[in-house]
Image (cartoon, rainbow, N blue to C red):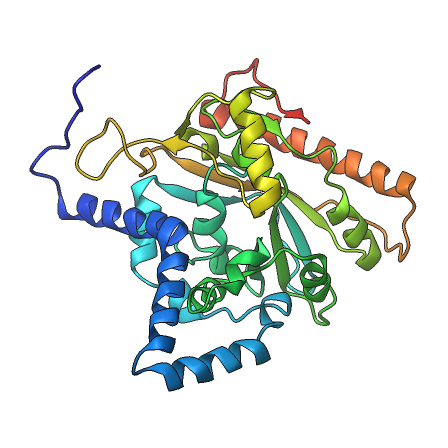
Length: 336
């Protein structure tokens, strides 16, 4: 087994700050929700039981907020830590077409990756300048409803613009008068995180048509978004489709509601093994909107028609930009 490759003792302060920023982000995904739950339970059993009880009652009253646009906070989205997070990889956001702030949109984000770093950096923070590139638009990244059942953590998640991925949540955003709401959906969902390996271009999309049905219901444009480099950040224990590990991961996902990829990359002080992502660039390209007609009750054939047109737009976006970001010309997207 090769010896670990350690980081140099002398590194610029900015590099250390970047590593710390990404470390806290990874820990927030893996540990913060559980820690917040433990603290809440301890508070209920200790001298802080009264404020904890009042907070618990308020949670009941506030339970619909994640399905009603959340509670984004411009101050949290602009924290300096997110600039260090951006520069670690680095993350960049490329707009190809101006978008009308008087309309609502669905952004279809691909690929999901292991932890959706590009989706978080571009749409849950202002580090890459979403507000400057698309003035008047407010991004909301849809994620699993289970995260909003965790006390305290839910407030942190909503402050960045995260909302529930339930259909009612998407419909609420698209029904807002005056426009300006952007629902960002990692359309491959948790199953696609199990496909996230360097060079992987398999997208879980063929059976995911619900977003098209809702977009047709409101006549909402759907914008393809491809994040080049998203799958290059981590390695996974080999889990090809049909393998024993993949079957186990699929079974656990159906039980728990979340995917459990066995991923690794680098550590804080060495580059050979750990849970921090590799320093690989993420270039997120936002394509032109696909205009959909408004059909309140679309038929299955109409849904399939517009789903196919969306896949074609996504392929065009990928093929148009892949050479800029080092993707071999023989590489193409595949849909499963």
